Amino acid sequence: MYAENYKRFLELIEKLREFEGALIVEGLRDEVALRNLGVRAEIIRLSRLPLAEIALIASRYREVMILTDFDRKGEELAKKLVSYLEGYPCRVDVETRRELKRIAKKDIKGVEELYGLYMKVVSVSDPQLEGFQ
Image (cartoon, rainbow, N blue to C red; front, side, top):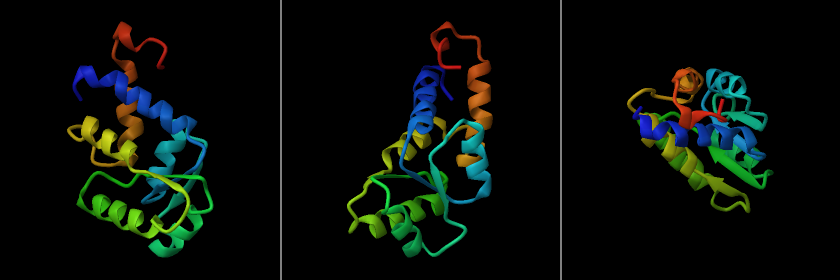
């Protein structure tokens, strides 16, 4: 990750921590990584149910954040989920995933690696990062 992206990466991690809706992830390791980052929001794992049922469960929340992995499969899942959620009144956030992917794609392939990258970023001794640790 380029040094100029460190601050934005940490802001996105803080956004995840403060998110109060439902987060949709692919599997258990993704959920564990997010919990390690301090995320308290409801986390719905795709590995448990069909996408239509996931969308129905997620639609009960005012906001839903899709946080699938950054690979082709994750991209396809995100698109399908957006399609399934279109008819529901919840607000769907895919932008956070897009921005994380843009910033971190050279370093990680998915959500389960976010915590490790976070630990690397906060260990960098950069005065601009003070207050984000």
